[in-house]
Length: 184
Image 1 (cartoon, rainbow, N blue to C red):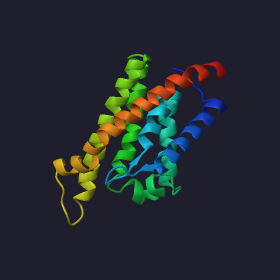
Image 2 (cartoon, rainbow, N blue to C red):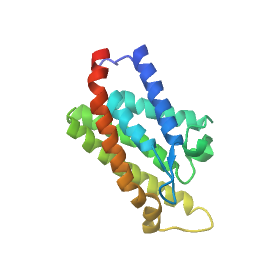
Image 3 (tube, rainbow, N blue to C red):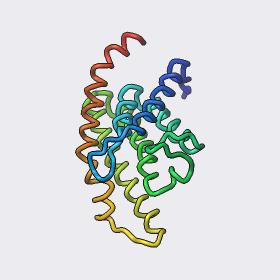
């Protein structure tokens, strides 16, 4: 099996979309007690535009930049403390979303409905992994938290906003896809 090489154009797009994820993680909408960022919107858009392989690579670049200290995470946070803190599981969950998207679009179909379903499944896995991580890290401290409390803080308030972000990313992708195909 031959490995497909990544072109200079693909590397540029991977880097550009990692930058888009970064900027969207900094943009915060104070509509609830916990601010809503546009991070998940950018993850969805990245996967839709770049596809499973390159989109997942872009998410990985974003995470690695944050890990080494570049302030790419929400609130301009960076480093191992941010990535491995209570909300770090959701950031790692973005990578799991990318892997699910890659596998489903590669082995099931490239149809838009499959792409959307894979992003929804990826979001559910991101929520599950992030919440399990949140509970584990939070419970290593002095106070303890249960599953329902963690879901009430970290998932339930974000379901509708995240589905709206998915719809927006899909609409933007549908507008951009014909243009991007012409420039390929």
